[in-house]
Image (cartoon, rainbow, N blue to C red; front, side, top):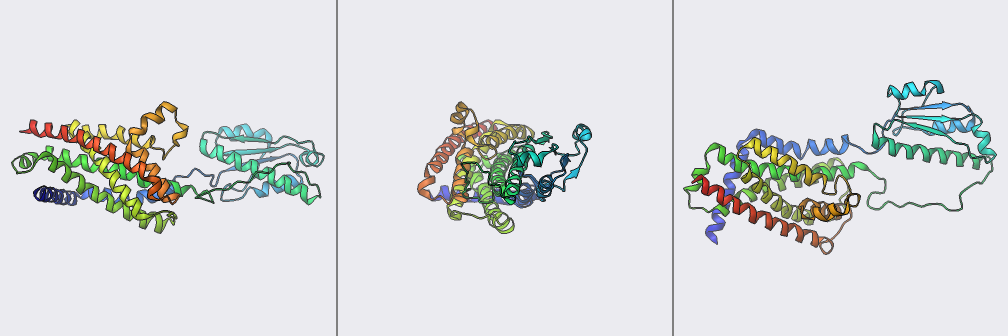
Length: 375
């Protein structure tokens, strides 16, 4: 056992030295857990921000003016008055994302309880902004109309009133989710890339023959590559969480950071085993890239981070349970966002360990055959 640990340790140190000598790959690791996480969380948003909006005010009343004044930044730009005859041309040219059309006698009809219709034209080529922005405009319209009626001494309200409470993210800050999701994506991508590149690099440089004449076994070589590359990713992933996400972006961490780091290490073991398995299938680095990219995309898109699992077809929800990314995303959201303890997330950790063991067994079997062919 002592000899096995010594061999694995020395082989892992060799991998760390090899990675440190690859300046481009080392720079890519640092970039992925720093600027990439920051830019993805702040540059991509699902919220309405500075949307161009125009207004056709055919009523020119106090109420219509209040509605126009309520469309404020940072959600909308200052509303631009336009003529109704120009609406189609302006929408076709893409100058405005929203055009609010207030009909004549709008204020009078509201005061008389006639419930007039207001038209909102939306450029839905920006689908997320269109859907969210329509809700914003509708809410502003209803709120300003209700406030205006109250100012005139008219108490006209619905018999029921909805009360919303947002847990874990009271202000619905979208970049909180984007930052954590970016961290998970980079953990997955870089682990597959580094471990796979380590195997392919040995083959392309001819150093695989050097390993074969050493008194080491196939599983020692594989485990050495797994722990060394997983250690690098875990180190920079932890730094990214503490410095970029928590320190710079000020995303609150509700749960235990040591618990998350422990779960991350287990996840990296599973993904690193998958990376070795993919590397034993490919013969060259281009082949590995063509194989790893679709695998990463599937793991990412079906992990539940980009789209909720509940929005997927039921058979797909069952099938993707074989992906460790699904369990890690649920583990991450539970720990970092909801403050879950080990008692609540241990089933996800157990699933990741089981899947990692399966990937490792398959990877070792193929790795032994690859070394046997090299002899």
